[in-house]
Length: 276
Ligand SMILES: [Fe+2]
Ligand SMILES: [Fe+2]
Image (cartoon, rainbow, N blue to C red; front, side, top):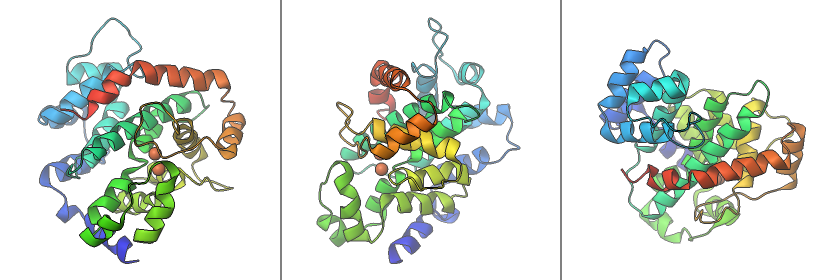
């Protein structure tokens, strides 16, 4: 319970850095216009380069041959919803200082799961690939939240576990999982349930899930990337549940293979994404 209180305090608007606060509240507001987006994003150099970089990724950039090199072009190519969700996801990451090299690995993992979630959602009728992308990008934010709220004594007890082993380790040290930590934190930022429930469910998919058209692709994506070569921060595993869900949404092996092929093409972007 103590951890939950600390996490909720972390999400309190008054404690956020001013730049993140401005962007998160503007991007969460439906009345924000296309001009506001351009203005907001162009004023933040790091954010602008990431948005432009994403527009050029193999996942988004279907018009091969024309490089996107400005925010207004990126809005044209990707659409406003995509830009909004990319910028919002990146701004939430920016709340956290990056004290460890290992966090870069975690970000690269988050970006891969985001691309895979968006791709799988694009294959599911009535799903929304932009929302799935944002949920995928934020799926492991709880790991960073736990590192941030953890007190020094707790962190030194935190083992350098890998893969799914991190979940029991988190339970032992913090009495909660990174799925709960992420969910509480994002709820504190007032993000909608369709974005934050996939965060809560991404390792344990309930029998009857709400927002299944978003939660399912994020869960499948996390499983698919479980053993992804070079992903040092992968914490998922391909499970019977992931297989069954993929079958339920008619995601066959060829779609999974295509998803992995796109990720391989995007490797360079993924590596560079958080370097700016
Ligand atoms: Fe996770
Ligand atoms: Fe993950």
